[in-house]
Image 1 (cartoon, rainbow, N blue to C red):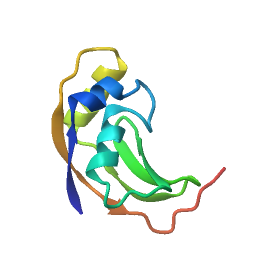
Image 2: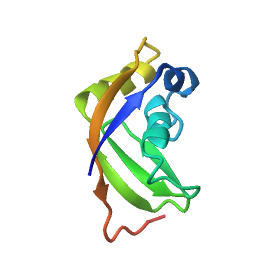
Image 3: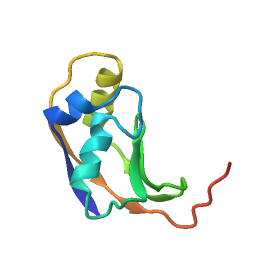
Image 4: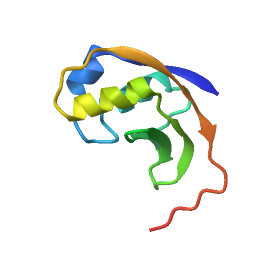
Length: 101
């Protein structure tokens, strides 16, 4: 399923560098994917991919980030100026995921 994510200035202002669950993109995903989020789910955003995880760590959905999102993350985490933007992601359901600790 394809979805649009819109990173707002508030997401940038409130987001944390190098924090996968509270970066601007994760904050935008919490809002823009509210229909699939729950008290037990949160996004985990990496440099090139993301996942929606249950609080126990199990992945439910995942996908790749487009180049503009990866560049945004690199700039934000590097302390360089960034601006609000939007991008599309393809959400893929996770099948047979087993958490290894």
